[in-house]
Image (tube, rainbow, N blue to C red; front, side, top):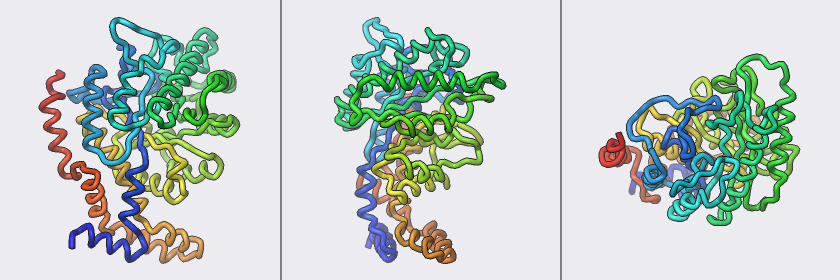
Length: 416
């Protein structure tokens, strides 16, 4: 009997069908973020990264153009199991033959190559307007700016992105999640907190008032607690974005688990939002003391987030995307490790005896609940995970590093 068969029988004894869990997992799309490959630089400008964001490290091999980025993302897809979407920022528009369009004038044609790449890998595309790293971020403000010319530019950018999102969905046949996040805020204590939020609300309403197919485009708004250079006041706070989504039909809230106070955890918020919203979206990262966007690992909070999605019946209601950027280690490994960690967390959640654990809680049998929860930590999960990797025809956890090391030698180190 194989190790997997032994593990399968062990799980079967507590009522868990591991084959069924793997079948569910391979159908769940997870959005792979393009900005890990080039440190959030994008293709439409060569200035500094702004908006309260910072990438640390200078590991060799950063993608310098769309050909290299596509090649790197293709390698990641090759080394990771499960169903993928691509997550693209508007700053990754591809201009050729001397053409250029500013962000308020970008069109679907500037993302045609992204569609071709997505189709090649049987993937949908999610999209993000880029409200940072641009000369028209004035005094740290975009959609909340008191300068109406500046605000108009960014409203037009959001409208352009709405059209591009619909194009992605039509071309790939997969709904596009369009996430709006702005880094607008102030470094020190504001004299007026309400004014910028009123302008931001009006800007969002102007963008989303434009006609679009609500079955194809899933707009959402993302909050943040603070950023570098905007430590004292963030316009798009959690209270603001949750209230906006709640009062504007068809708009989802998006939670990034690095965008809260250090003592808050998104795992606890998932069920709270699912109690009220038909659908929600997540950006999955690993915050270390703040929104540092470390590579996602198979750690306690990652497992707890996945568990909450599964236990809350949210697999069909939660749009899952990765969002981190580590330039201190091999970028391909960062991508692969993070994607596999989230897949691992989902499989772990799917192989828990969730129904029995809920029943113990409802019956008030907290003693047995604790015993069972502890027992599951040492169940032979690694054998289930390895079987999943084999079925998905990707290398195991102890094999994929060598593939990345070879790719680094053959491709990445030549980019110096």
